[in-house]
Amino acid sequence: MDFAIPNELTNSLSRFKDYINSRIIPNLRSWNRQGAIPRAFFQQMGENGWYGLKFKDGQIQGESTLMEALVAEELAIVSPGVAIAALAHVDLGLMGLYLFGSRDHHQAYGKAATRGSSVMCLGNTENLAGSDVAGISMTAEKADGGWILNGTKAYVTNGFVADLGVITAVSDPQAARNNRLSMYLVNLNQENIRRTKLNKQVWIPSDLTRLKFDTVFVPDGHLLGVRGRGLQQVLEIFTRSRVPIAALTLGGAVGAFNLAVNHMRKRKIFGRPITEFQAKAFEISKFYAEIESARLMIWKACWQMEREKNFRQAASLAKYLAVEVARKVTLWAADIFGAASVVHEHPVHKYPMDTWGSSLGEGTQDVQKLIIFRELMKRWDAGD
Ligand SMILES: Cc1cc2nc3c(=O)[nH]c(=O)nc-3n(C[C@H](O)[C@H](O)[C@H](O)COP(=O)(O)OP(=O)(O)OC[C@H]3O[C@@H](n4cnc5c(N)ncnc54)[C@H](O)[C@@H]3O)c2cc1C
Image (cartoon, rainbow, N blue to C red; front, side):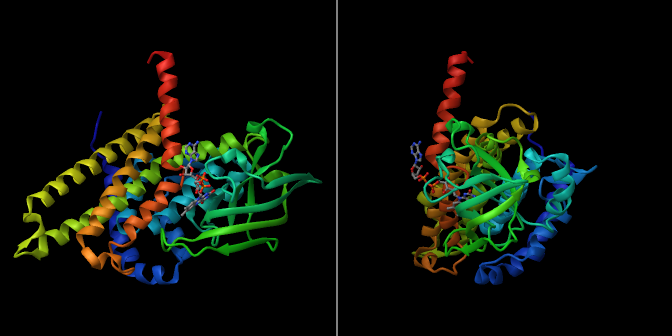
């Protein structure tokens, strides 16, 4: 096993860090105030090839999963809220197009989406169905030449800015629970889709939006994948996106950790820097060890994905561990700043809030534990 990051990734990552310093950090305060990310960000990410998916020979092609994890971590060190917008575009929306789109879909939409000139999102969760992905109730009724969609997607990251949505709906209500859903590629710029931006306190400045569909016509050609396989398809997207969201979550922990350690080395209490209290020095070591171990799990999941091995359990382990570590580290880091940390504008304030977001997106911690247990039992039964 080789832990060295390949040269071409190191070069691209170093360009990405320069980009963060020159184009993200100077603008972050203003984006946070507006609660919005300019479209230019999505384009710059795409034009520089930092999405992990590219358009070549008329189709969307996958690139390095490890690179994607490194990018997610670096961006989230500075802003988990900006990182989640990129992730929702590429790992939720665009991933649906990549995995389940036909060659015609790739040709029609792949170039603009991989370059970020068209922004994507994925809408599955409804008010009464989140963890229970199959329990959604948005309907897709067959009509002449297409489908009519009705219902509401309750929490959609990028829903306010996206041009195209990957949307799940019940196409076959009489079928067995696992075969009721289909997946559609929907042009969101149409009158009978109402977008309501929600007032949230996590992952600022990304948007979280409710999408209400009122008799929305979707042509037959916009069915993604196979009719009746929408559940399996959306679960596959979530399984894959657990790895980058784990990296993003870890990035938040690292961002908070870095702020705290810098502060501890400078701030004097009872006449000496906080790092000189051994109890506090040990906390730094403990959390550093936890951050390193979560990162190793994320890299292992990337390694498995890139070699097309079964990565279902590794992806859930990575997300579960990253959230557990980030919950502890970000709250600890906030504590290190004392009262200053509760002020909304304080740089450390966002990290515990953003970990809260991470603990929900792509499956809660309970859902990760269910998957870890099921995969473990499968291997147990197989005697592995
Ligand atoms: C900031 C943010 C962004 C989001 N972005 C998107 C998006 O872009 N697209 C999208 O489709 N969704 C999105 N979501 C929704 C997210 O995927 C869901 O919130 C998540 O899947 C949990 O669903 P729920 O909120 O309905 O909670 P529920 O499913 O109602 O869960 C409630 C509680 O029950 C527990 N629970 C559930 N099932 C079990 C079980 N079997 N065993 C034990 N405990 C269980 C859960 O762990 C949780 O503690 C987003 C959510 C947030 C907060």
